[in-house]
Image (cartoon, rainbow, N blue to C red; front, side, top):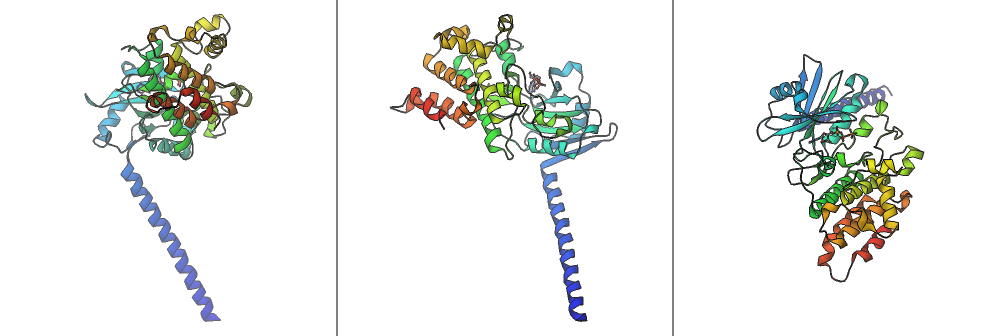
Length: 367
Ligand SMILES: Nc1ncnc2c1ncn2[C@@H]1O[C@H](COP(=O)(O)OP(=O)(O)OP(=O)(O)O)[C@@H](O)[C@H]1O
């Protein structure tokens, strides 16, 4: 009896030791993995911490001099500002630059989940998404370090705020529409957990050196929620882009992103702002105005005159897709997967004999 008790005690001790050892090994492995993926540096002076995700862009950076450069950013480096803070250009050398977004709230009122969110955002890599390269947290403010998009935002290019204004012809607009749709689809479908952007708009669609669309600010609305509760009732989003149901429910959904994307498509087609002054004077907005013009069977009246000449077939199909995205009833809107298929089909159909967009649009929309 005494022997079996001692044996049981022995086994329990072994099991406990094995459990503790496995926990220690797991922690070491996780730390090693984290170290492989990140460079972290403490800023003694400000009590802040900078974390850079390792990549071909950041591998060669000397973290201490990069941190110094970041701390020296000033008003002359500002390239934009928005609801969450100010964006600065940080040039490391002639060929490498970053966009640094300073968030006005500091980490004093945040917990470790804020950093976990940022690390998850750093794992998101897609050709149509702006890469997050790192972050800096301190008690008074936080910095997000992004890939710099040399051609600025779609909003600036379309609505004339861009310094190096580029004329957007139809092929460029179509390419931006498809790229942005693929980026949003990636967030909705391929990210685990799935990400609802909540603030799709032309100023959050940035343009890289090849005028390829890159979706930015993903995950930021949730990150900036008071107490970061992830209950999607915080009013995020921008008037003119918000789906009608959002005003009743306050709930962010993937179909809400589809609606906002529909507004961006209208901006690409019409060259007008969602809440342009011309609409406000008449008590309307871009979406209602375009829907009215289409009902009156004169859609060409809505199109951007600077598009002329344009391939009417392609433009009409993109307009049809935009109107589907803007259906007031969320269940009637297509998913982003369907939107991407429909947009891609516009170009591919030329090579597919016997099918027309008239066939594909209704078919895809019933999915
Ligand atoms: N990665 C980037 N590369 C180049 N320019 C950028 C980058 N991120 C932001 N910008 C510029 O800074 C501007 C402000 O960006 P920000 O995301 O802070 O605000 P916003 O999208 O205009 O508005 P909101 O904060 O309400 O979403 C953008 O319109 C864009 O011109």
